[in-house]
Length: 259
Image (cartoon, rainbow, N blue to C red; front, side, top):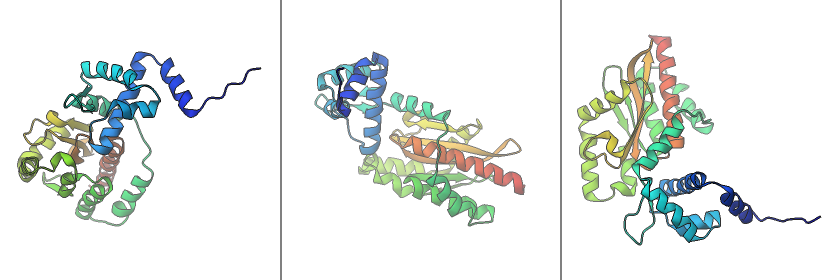
């Protein structure tokens, strides 16, 4: 009997070869998205080929299809590819109906917020601070009296998308206009569902490189406030979406008990 011995690399190449074109495109786009979320830099065919064990030419051919379909873009000829807003939109949509265990994050939120503080105001303010520290993004909580409480605005300026003076000034202008920002987020919360608005979907000058994730909390099925995160388009959606959802659900349960 002949025995075959496959290395991990051989196995990856074999699996990729057996995939149809759609699955190949999906796998390569996943790699590009993950790399861009981590680094913010264009992703080259060589990087993808090293992961999959395939030639750069093979990867470039599939990248060309993804670019034609609008999922990736090439800033200039010699650069790698960047995921487009459409790619991030499809990725975010895929997370909305999935439930992921939070583990450490839920324990930390519950320990730092819900088990430590007793008054509604204390919980709101410390929840905002906790999720900002946990995610390294800007957090917000909207009170039932239509007041927005924000924390960790400085986190946004840790990302290269907002490092130039022009980018920073445009973003600061939006964050400083609290009434306009409150109105924008309240529009999202009015649906009663968890909302993810990516880049230009926010329709606000200065927010083109931002994503807002917002979820409403309710009392007797009536929306009374909201909680969420503002970060770069290349946000860690898989981590942030469950955290926002958990907080909104926790606020709703808390308010049902006290009101």
